[in-house]
Length: 232
Image (tube, rainbow, N blue to C red; front, top):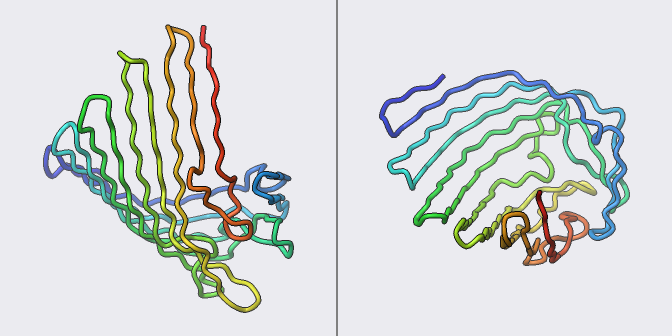
């Protein structure tokens, strides 16, 4: 359902049912990330998940350079497919959560102060619940902030982008207790320069702050790259 109470405002309301079968990756994958030091194995016994979803959102565009959006959501999921741990601290798999619910709100702002320059900022508040064990879902953060900055100049042949995300603490359950993994921040950057009509040089860095820890946040460490792309 879409409502337009004002030329600059759009309101959307939606309700739906969902079905998701396990992917090939979730069923059968065996992936070894030697850089981060962990292994992911599939679970062939996964069941499909089903869900009921409610969403309400408001978008406001007061000018061509500014866009603001807010939304709230609620989901009830049976047999939620999610990431799970094994007895080995370096091996992860996929599991079903018999009954779960998630709800939250998100505020997003996009702004283009100058031609070619685009900035984005978003905040998400997220509440989750395992309805069988009566506790928050494991490894799901309650807060997340993301930001992005892009600049593109066709005249100069430049394309630069910087992205950052802050992820709040996440609960983990082991040995009868609850452990909260520390918040972390990811920062990625990339710069590309077009040479002529067919060649582009690029360089970048992922995880500039070198976030991550082996047990609760096994992501690849800081890395740098450069390359060239040719199109004909």
